[in-house]
Image (cartoon, rainbow, N blue to C red; front, side):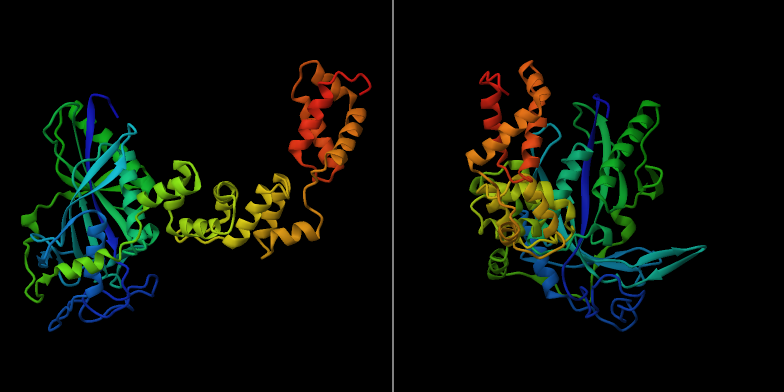
Length: 479
């Protein structure tokens, strides 16, 4: 990114709502069914059929709006957005154009310079999804299972200024939708995807440049890469005397480039009209109050509380709340240990790489990990033994405390016992003693290793080091 230009970015995020059935019919929304098995005359738009609005889809849209501090419309309507595409059998999509259900919200994220940036939410509207094209050899097939799946589209204002900011916004939005149960946000299944609107202008200018739209990106990494490429492309066009064209593009993951799909449509192209088969959506104050009460502690507030209550770093708190299941897992364990800092370190440093993500699933029960944190905090076992116990816990449902005592793995803290091993080590390794006393401080590691070997890994390493230093610095010529 050249310093004399800046990117102006807005995102249109499509999130599949977490309902059991589609938005206008009773077909299931479950992912992965054989092609064209979750369809009916209503979601295929066959003549004589009438849509019936899914109440829960409206409720989830309102919950999302309230979580993003939006104004909720007491009265909104649905509209027909008309366009032809092979996977849109009706020839139009039921959406909202003039009267969205939510407007004028915001979400605060960390900007690329480290400052907090308030990103405006222009609107959130409900709509139905289209189907899916499946390319097999020289044939393109249509799977209509996704037709009629309920979506919300969350449209931000052009307040983002780079790929990292856009990714931070998208991640924060995902965390909120997950926490509120609005969507499962599984990007690999297409239930969270976004369109990127991007233009560039010279630094200091107020006027927006001509924007392009990059469609249907379903990866945080690809969002950032697509923005980086498109920003550089537009700057190159301007610097070479050309003009950026308003168009729709796609991101080619293999080539790392954006590719033109078509000239950008306008609202007039879609020939919006009020949906004649649907009544307006009316929400009372009591409806909104009831839905507001369903909103749980939001991720940003939860991160602040975790940091405050458990004394963890802000970074660790943010990692925990990035996955709802992981934060729940930690808090369940934290109730059972006196050492929550050790618990979070075990979770993030040792256990996390062995867990499943999206949703978070740990191979170790939270109470068992809390028990291990207690053993380490009490110095009943040392860190090396703790790692061995954790390794067993990944494949065996064991009590680490019981195993530590039953198998003689508890830490030896008796100074006299450890002192005898220290004396034997100093006598056995005179070269290491000489090296340490001549200024080679790293030599103490080999001495510590020998003491730990004599104790079969059970000596308290802190006491071991203290006793070694006392002997080495004593000037005792007999060792």
